[in-house]
Length: 305
Ligand code: HSE
Image (tube, rainbow, N blue to C red; front, top):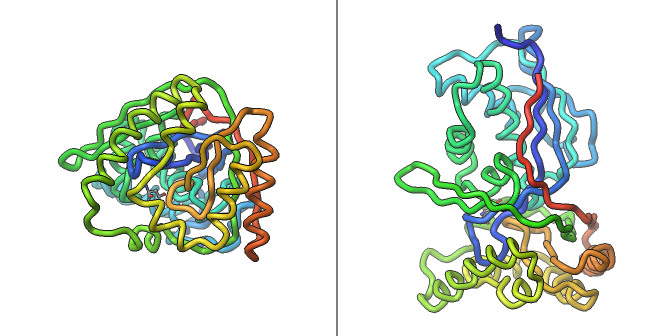
């Protein structure tokens, strides 16, 4: 029998991790939660927490969670149920580079999957999420937790998950509107082969450094020439925030996803100072900014009935 109420929790994620453009994802211990009930005759979405800027989000069937829910039903050749009430507690800042859209997509897909008695396994959900997101990196980490590396092969997604030792990262989230679409439009169609080589070798080493918790190695290899040079220029205060993080003890700094947030790796004890330094630098550039110190999450999406 189909359940009448389902709760889904999905973690924040940071994608790219420097050289792993569109491939790497890391799950973080900050969770969006959505409770799904089938009742009434219209789809509507409530937000119980505006801390993640949810006030801007659609509250009807055009909401991304509701659209993702309907998408899975339609993939099964089914009409989505008429009355869907979703109550969201959003903590992941919206449009920030911390995977908020992936949390929405995965919430909707995971809930619909549970209502239909789980026709899709995690790999199947990732393929649906990638159709909606356009790239698998945030969604893979959101599903599997830990560190993920993904690629798209003839429309199928191949993902591997890696355990990482527990550690925290510092993030600074400036209030600057940079839609992923615009951040992707800023990238060139072609890149010089030397830039591709620069990234390939570093990408492998970033995985090794994260798996070993090796900050020295991470500090030497967390760099990128495929997307960050084009995106940093779009974000006021980004270069200054990167420098401030390093001065406060960060060993490696990257754009979180497509930005505008910055992600910094440092010794655990330095994380609060690094986060505060990045926040101050963005504020000095005239942007309101929040900062966080977050542990990584070894687990991804959680569904309870
Ligand atoms: N890999 C994607 C990008 C992440 O950098 O555009 C966006 O969330």
